[in-house]
Length: 66
Image (cartoon, rainbow, N blue to C red; front, side):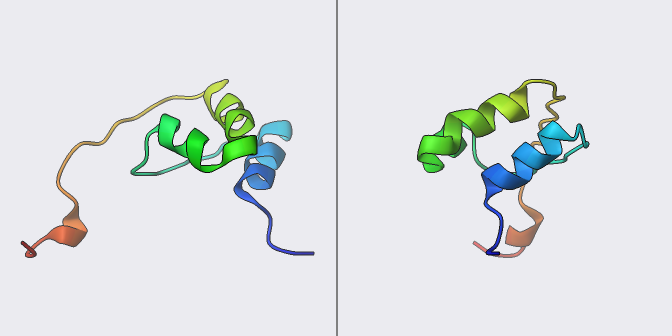
């Protein structure tokens, strides 16, 4: 069996009601567009019952670079 897709991971966690933490620098719109045919299904599962926590700030990995 190959590596599971992001859809398979999210779907399994959704169906088994497992808590899931997702971190991304992308918007939901960009994620939906990126995953094309499964994008809307991914969005639906992620946003059905969630708490959005927005973290703003400078990327610590960029510290000292300019």
